[in-house]
Image (cartoon, rainbow, N blue to C red; front, side, top):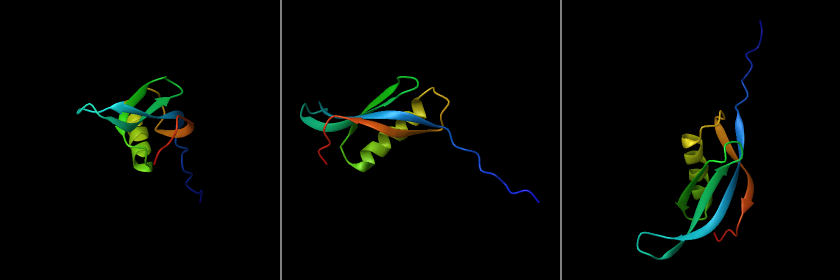
Length: 83
């Protein structure tokens, strides 16, 4: 009997940019942007510099990006992380 083999999930590399932007009240707040290396599509701002914000940015990028990948992986970081 042959063993079932898992299919490899397609992952696309992404760049995460740590920066700050003005929020709705006009105050500067730390945020994250994510950009796909394959399609150059980017999403953001996602407020905060924590791990949850980075995961949310990558999940939103996966949801909206047109590349064939099933997931986006943080391969490069730019800017200074404050949290």
